[in-house]
Length: 316
Image 1 (tube, rainbow, N blue to C red):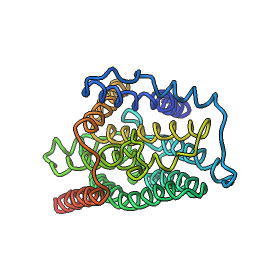
Image 2: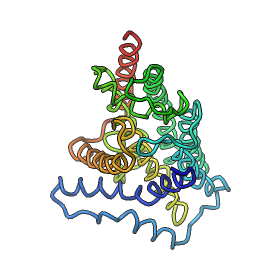
Image 3: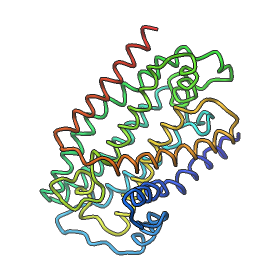
Image 4: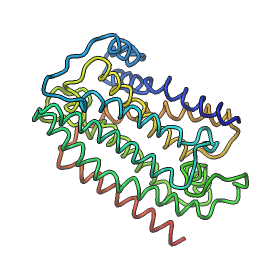
């Protein structure tokens, strides 16, 4: 496929369909609770409404407050093209691009934290502190899980004989090696999608890590950091959160699907991505929010599973 066409299709799918994921999650939660709930397209309506509103900006803030959400949105948009699409390697792939993707997302989080601290609010500073703490705990889990895929990609299954992307790129790590390895009896690799699902919940501040619908500042993580934002900057935050959710859902999808023809793979990817959104909605419906001291234990458990998977992969 033409490089430009590939990038346009990849970004168009993410930019257009990403706000649908929170809508699916909310609809599932409403159905499980027996409520009518919000419309499926509610996030689109919210974005349109916020973009048409003005902003109320405190006199204690500086340019950091307004630019933080814009930087956070820009970083996640820059990270999206590094993922493969429908089993095809990204034209932007290069050795170590997963490091760039991880730190682009980290830069976006850092910008939001600075914007929260710039308000001078003690509540938003508390949320920023929690966000920084849990992101620091999640980072080694992410890299250890990626290290398992790096070890696996050094000896790709014989079924993959096509031209390969760079060995240490996202496109190589998520190019179907793990799915084919499962068929060869590498059961320890089944832990990796579960680890990435935990990271999805943590990085996107979903239940049971954080409650995106809570109104109690003492229990908030992400939501307390954006209390002072309104209008277009709040739209950037909402849209950036949807794109970040799309990034992690697309990552898991690319990991578990085996190689297949492009359009068939694309259809299966979209179905699985929406299915993962349904799974997030179910998790949020059946689990209560964890107490803050318990969240590090959750990440420690994910880190232990990643370490176990790496050991079993290396001793093969």
